[in-house]
Image (cartoon, rainbow over all chains, first blue to last red):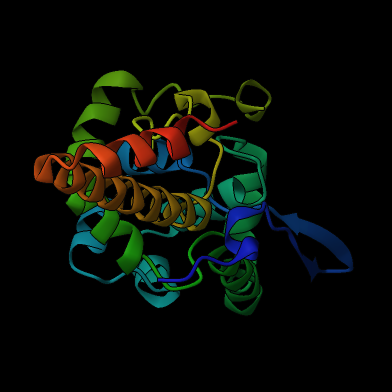
Amino acid sequence: VSVSLLDLAPLKRTVRLRGVDVDVVGIAAQDIPYLVGRFSVLGRLAAEGRFGLDELAAAAPEALAAILACGIGARGDEAVEARAKELKLGEQAALFAAIVEVSLPDGPGPFLDALRKLGLSLQAIMSEAVTAAPPSTPSPPSSTN
Amino acid sequence: LIGAGYRESELWPLTPRQLIARLRLARRRRRHELAAALSLNALAARGEAKELKRQLKKLQRD
């Protein structure tokens, strides 16, 4: 399997929303236990392979807003999440597509496979994340950088 | 990846795309190392002193 230099390097995409350029840095590994620990529905959706925008928007709009915030480097920023939740579906879709492109261009499958090969699952990460970081105390974005 | 020499703190900020790429490289490197070890072990098992000496000299060359 070939490895592209582009897959090794950090990528950034810019999405223009309501006249403002938003830098998309993608979902980092550290965001995953945070998100899955905070929204257990994400572990369930991922396990069922239902990880598209439509599923997320329907089943877990708060989780989608948190994902969008993480994707622009604002993990746990409630103000950003609130604005992300207010975006129209098309706007959320543009942001979500850029986040997926930067973070998981082949979808979650290869990453979940890699976790499985390491004997991990999102459910296991979820239970550890719940123990390590209670959902009621999200980290402010400044503490993550 | 930690086994391949990465520090945990280096890995958490990476995206899954970057992690998968590093995992693939680490796996490829591990396979090459295993192939080299297998080749050397096979050579050593044959016990040909001249060939062993030649190989050692090659490996120790700066």
